[in-house]
Length: 351
Image (cartoon, rainbow, N blue to C red; front, side):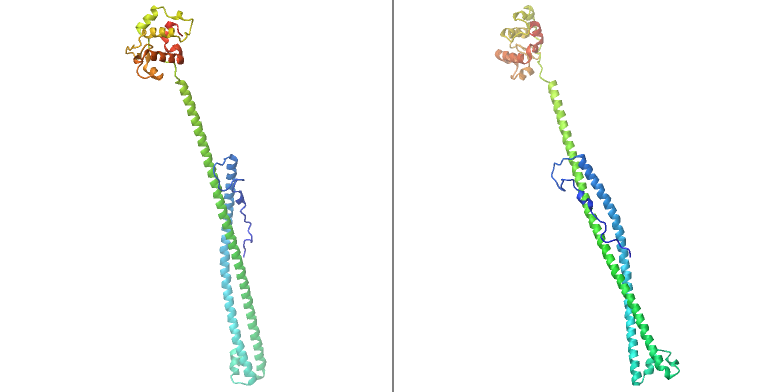
């Protein structure tokens, strides 16, 4: 019977490759993902899968051999049982014949009655013996032949039984060896499958980390873009000097009739002096701190309600005191210059 050589060339060489150098089977984040580590794990997973496939083929081969060995063991055991039974039968027959021969010898040398019956049992052709003088030689030769034949038969059967016993022993050893090889292969493949699952787990964790890193980077980029858009929007809507309402007719008339006030200060832009603010009040509203014509602009400086509240004041400008209106005008001029009152600054030469 052919058997797989004991000590199959079975190794689990990739077991030690399942983890990256310096990377434990279980780790805590963060682990820096690199293309090299991903490629290494992919290569290891491929090698493990190939070895598992090859060893699975070997397992199938050994399993077939185990089945064959078991069947042969059944046959050898059946042969051994038949040979043992035959040997037992021969031994029984030998014992019976021996007892008959003993009875014959006793009858011969004691002239006991019944000796002829014994001879007849040993040899059915005894009655054909013609002469009594040849009886003893014929009987003794027959006895020798009987003993020799039964000894030979017994030896043959014993040899057959010994051969069958040897076959049973060999088949048993072969079956046990194959079974051990099969268990070893199955255990090795199970270990490799566990290692392969671990490698796939590591790959999945690395991929998840990469996705998380990419998501974080994308979020950072989106936040940076949002901040840039917000900054650009803030720049685009940065507070600009808000022009006030057109001056009242009385104010413009007074400013024009006076010929403008540009000659009252030494060039443009005019300094924020009391004289300049007085000229501005006169141009905007004729100096009327309670001016409210219903055009949406109020007071001596013709503030809009939004500009007024934007400067930190409450209520309507026309309801505020002259000192408060003068203060608001000074704040507005410091922030935006005389251009907050474009028409009057042009008429008066303030800007």
